[in-house]
Every structure is written in structure tokens, then in C-alpha cells.
Length: 450
Image (cartoon, rainbow, N blue to C red):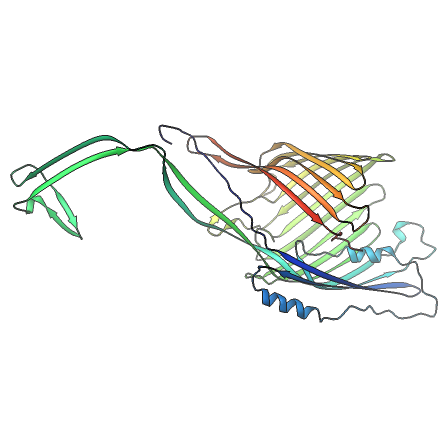
């Protein structure tokens, strides 16, 4: 502060540098059936080129070598009876339900599935046999390196200098002028000098300035080899998955996890899971989660869903370098959603302070409408949000160019982002508002390409 102002001006600037990447993938799928069961073998090969990435030659050699790995050909014994063409749908669902690492590029994936085929004596969902699918996945996954760079501190003048006071004196050995001087670590005093004459004049100046401090926080994303083993058992009303893997980053990460999902015919749904990491960070960390929901049918084209859930982040990293920086990840929430024809309205309340490292209190209202099958308009508002980094409102649009499964999709998104940095030394609130706009063009449906 100075005589001009007792306020703090806070500015936030964000700069994102993207690296272009191109991916070409091939899928080879083989299905065999006899009179009692069917098997499925799925092989996926991908090749990703980063225009400006770390170790481009090493990544290229690894991916080129993976193209030579064999296709998965399932083994099934023949039968004297004709093959049963009523292949169990759970076989395909099991292959699609396999866990794929998020935000990753596939180099090679090979999996085998098996399920008993359908017979005429099956009369209910519970009688449909379950299917199993087990696979190996190899690819590249992102690891984010975070650090705070050395800050810069300086003074910014806001007014000219003016003199507050000035004074001076001069004299020699017969005057009362005293002087002590240090030159090159040698000290000279008028008490030890003869035949000297000294002049001392001082001006005291004042100038208005702003105290400026600049802090730089930097994130760098790099992709590292990732090997994962995963499998699942898919029934008509439940899904059980397991997964284990290793990410060969500078600090190697090992993980092991499982999750369970169940849906009942009367509208109940249950989900729970756990995953544990060795050498966790702010993106890959151990978690326990669960939720339960109930869907109530109101009419032919309307239903109401009530749900509650939690996510407990156990060991998420709380430091960036030597700086303690706690970013919440745990949550406890209850929600309700009304789906009525082309309209959907949702309300979610997040409770803060129940679990360690938890988000603060938040109330979120959502709305979406689909006037036609290929267009969805949506928006949200958070009338209550006590988190330090929050989005209070936003809107979006998703437009599928054709009404087909793998048709191109164009999406627009806008969100108002607010950052709360607390109070300055004068008690003034430090808030920064940003408006973020995103345009995304996507071809295909990556999660379930079949």
C-alpha cells in the first residue's frame, strides 16, 4: 500500500502449449461358436506420432516393434451338433467393459472372451450365462510434472520523486565534523587523520511505488510406457472388474484395483471399488468409492433418479516440490435427476468436511434439452460453492453431424471459472474471474467402437 491506494491488484495469466499428435489404429476381431458356447478374440494395434515429444525415436521404435506382435486367435473345440447362432450378448459387453487407462494412447491390446450361448429354456435375465474377458494392454499414458519456478520481486514507480529533507556540512581538522569511511575493508576515521577536508551532503527522497511479486506455476505433461492386465465378468445385471499395471515413468508407479457394479430390474443400482498405487502423485492415487441409486418410473417417457455416493482419496500427493499445496479430491454427495422426454434436470449437493482432503460445500443445478436426436443444449449453475477454485455457471452444446453411431461430433463449451486466493494484508478479497471457451471435434465413439 501507499498514499494512493490501500488495495491489492491481482492478475492471473494462463498459457497452454499443445503438441500435435496423430494416431492410426487397427482392430482385428475373431468370433468362433459351437453348439454350446462362443469365444471372442480382439486385437488392437495403434501407432501414435508426437510432433514435438520427449524421446520420439524411442517411442517410435517401441510402437513399431509392437506392430509385429501376433493377433489373438481364440481356441474352441468343434462339435458334432450344428453351431448355436444365438451368441450370448454378454460376450460383446464383456469385451467392451474392459478397463482402458484414461487419456492414454493404445499401442497393442490383446484379449480373449468366452460365454455360453443362449438356449430356448432361458426365460429371465438372471438365467442368461455370464461372460468373461481378459486382456493385456500396452500403451502410453500421461504423467504430469508440476513445479513452482523462482518468483520475481520488484518495485514499480507510480509517481515522480520529491525531496523530504536535505542537509549537509563540510570542514577540516579544526572543525567538529566527524566521519568514518570503509574502503575495500579498510576503515578510515577523521580521528586518525591529519590535514583533511570533508564534505557531507544528504538528500532524503520519497516516491510512490507498487510492490510487485510474480509467481510462476508450471505443468508439463509427458507420456510414458504403460502395461496393464485387466479382466471382467459381465452378467445381465452385474459387472466385476480387476486391473493391475505399471507405468514406467521416472518414478515407477504400480497399481492394483477392482470394482463392482450391479443393476436390478426394479431400478436399484450399486457400485463400489478400490484401487491402490505405489508411488502415488496428484493424478494417480489410491481411492475407495461407492454409490447407490434408485430410478423411479413416473410415466412412459419420464423417470426420477435418487442417488448418493462417496469417493475417498487416500494418499493423493499434497506437495509440489517443497511447497505444500493441498488439492481436494474426496467427496460425499447426494443427487436427484428428473428425465422427462427431451428435458433433463439435475440437482447435486456435495458435503464438505466429512472425509479428509474433501471438497467444500457445493450445490450444483444442471439442465439439458435435446430438441432433436443429434443436438443437446445444456447449462449449469452453482448457487453455493465454497471451494477456492470453482465454476459458478456455464453452458454447452453437443451436435452430432449425423444420426449414426460413429458420426462426427462437434461440441462447444463455456464456463465461468473463479479463483479465490483469500485476503491480502489489508483484508481485501483476492478473486480472479476467467471465462473459458472450448471447441472440440471428435470422430467416432472411442469408448465402444463396436
